[in-house]
Length: 47
Image (tube, rainbow, N blue to C red; front, side, top):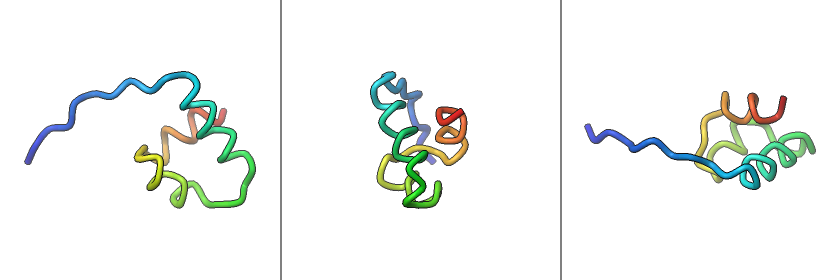
């Protein structure tokens, strides 16, 4: 199993994902796949 290196997301990327989540058009699970982040990260960035 390969270990994934730690990624640092820019504030602009976090804001983009959070605003998309706030629109409520898709579920968090549906948003997590195209942005390649975990659902819990989207929840934290949204708050």
